[in-house]
View 1 (spheres, each protein chain N blue to C red):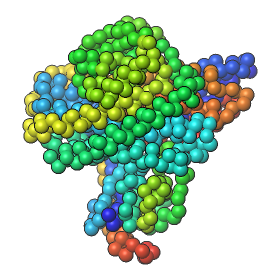
View 2 (view 1 turned 135 degrees about the vertical axis):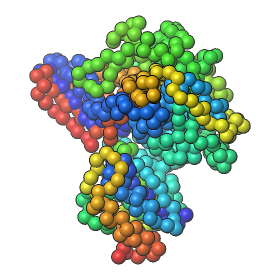
View 3 (view 1 turned 180 degrees about the vertical axis):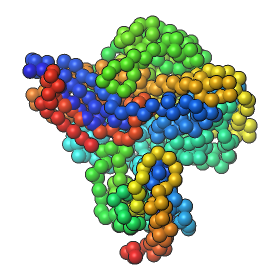
Length: 144
Length: 474
């Protein structure tokens, strides 16, 4: 397995589903659609060279890529609150994952029940997909 | 001065809750309550919707056991149509229900409870989690992850996705199973059985060192209620209800799930959003009963699969009557996982599983029906009433966690009375109170329809409600 993209969020909660819309535009690698992070995902990262998590973030103004550095165990106690960093740490320790791990934070503001994105969230999809596609086609470099 | 200790949020369970521990003037724990603090009201959402939408809607009740909700909902739909689903659909429903028992129990046992069991209830809380297990027992946790993966993969291959699959329907299921999917599923069986035999051996080897917890984390007489097959065996999809008492005597047998509301009633308390189910003939609170893995193994005479039967015989020898220690939900969960994998293997070898005819179609023929099945945490009922064109008028969901509510409250109280010393609170004491709850693996998002994670707070209060001490985890 080369590149794994993990799209996170609930598409029935408005902008929380934005990651899935971005993932739909990506091509050439494996994509997983997840509501939440659970330990099984660590096993699926085994052998991946690059893993990119896409996630809605009300604090993000625009799509941004950030490398996930080092292990994190901060929220490991609760199965419902595992973070991408926790999953990466678990994959490294249990499955010898040694690839690059990134998170792409996507602007989100409206998490009301229902499908569809806010205009602001929808407006960033193409740019986010371009960023991720560019990253994984040259995975060893920093994001541009 | 009388005091109250509150644990809020309770951790490593599914949903939001808190625990209040009341302390008398002499400094002894007097009583305890398990509060579920959120409400969703799924039944109300159903009203006015077409009944054939219900399985898809009910799949959203829970992210852990959506398959059971889909099955109970689809079975209620079968009843409204007045049809029997084709054999391939029944086999597929059974297959996915076993897969869900497997993945849900794997989450409960390996991810949520094993840190207590393998690392110790008094081990540092910052280590008492999956990373602590990775350090100490990497093979054990890898096997747990694989077991959950297996269950999730079966659900994904047949149901289209792992969480909230929309796959069941009134009259059957939406799609036949492919040979490729069946063959992939079959490839997981051998390894899964080996992992479960290892885990059972590991857990049983720990029991001697956990005697105090076994005796005081919810060990009391109660009724046990579960579904059995026509010959009294372990059954999860279709069957009749049996109730036994703590001595193992059959109190009621061959009860029809369709008539659940003639023998089960629910009471409410103002301090929690979860109702208290009880066995009607004995009233409230005397008719308290337990459901789920422990209850199922107490009501069944046999498992019907060779490896699980051997374990069941050993399990039932733990007591002359029913096994009343709630701690043994953990052992029962592993036996059920073993049984589920054996049943999955049988189903995958049944040629009818790949049948193309998977749905019986009809217009609504009845205005009221009940669908039931054994969900991972216990028996589940969906009771629907529709008008002449199939529009939902009323839905009532009776969930396992609600049926265990009285028992969970008793377990919390017993654990608090045994382990909590109000003047010298320690994290390990409070963890034992939480561990009593975890035995039941409550799914509060199902029972109250609350969203999210399970924070936990313990508050120490006097009888006027004044908070004297508080510990909070998030």
